[in-house]
Picture 1 (cartoon, rainbow, N blue to C red):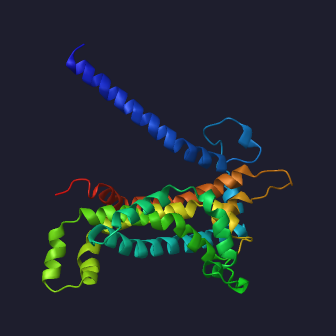
Picture 2 (picture 1 turned 60 degrees about the horizontal axis):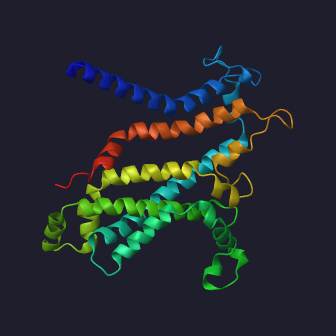
Picture 3 (picture 1 turned 45 degrees about the horizontal axis):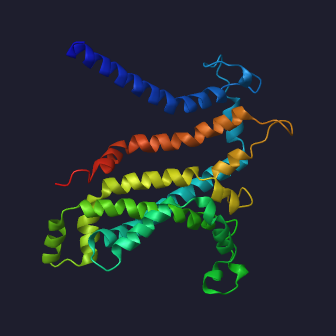
Length: 290
């Protein structure tokens, strides 16, 4: 076999693998779009292209008050979690990545362990805290209960968002040249001024990437939203979709559920397309130390 033929076979195999990966990733979303354009009776027909544009499912979705409330709550909670995570996480990452102090590596390892912890393992303790926040100091003040509020979701989402943000940003702060920090300190800047005037702007790609991943995780979260809320005034959009009801008691409106799933996925796609250059820069920054 000639080198040219071997190279052509490798190219064919490479593009075949890429095609399989793209199909594997995009087909579920494509199937959700196709299913959302079908009537309830057409859902059981194995057709990969819609025979007609049946848009009633989207009309039903946007006329569902619980879905609109959940969408609003998801926007508020996801943005709040992302902003709080980036603010606190950037301070913590700067300390762990740039400042010398005893036990820094131990703290960083603990942060890494927290990112690996299964969420279901902490639901019970978080539920107790949300019902009575004063329990952390050994007091009893049920009047301060955060249960069934958006605040409860923001606090509990930080359990997985904050360790992830801190750990990822720490690596970016470590990769920044030490000469920049030394020059700022020589010019009379305080450590805080060095942080937010010199180093923080350089980590903007990392902040965008980490913020996007945190936002997506908070947007798609289901377990905590179901556990710490009781009604649709506080629930996010994911539980709202799970409680969609059909025309009859035992009917599951799959076309409406698929339409709602498409609607809540579109904002994530738009955000990724808008910030795609920043995301790529953030994913590659620090890969080569120069």
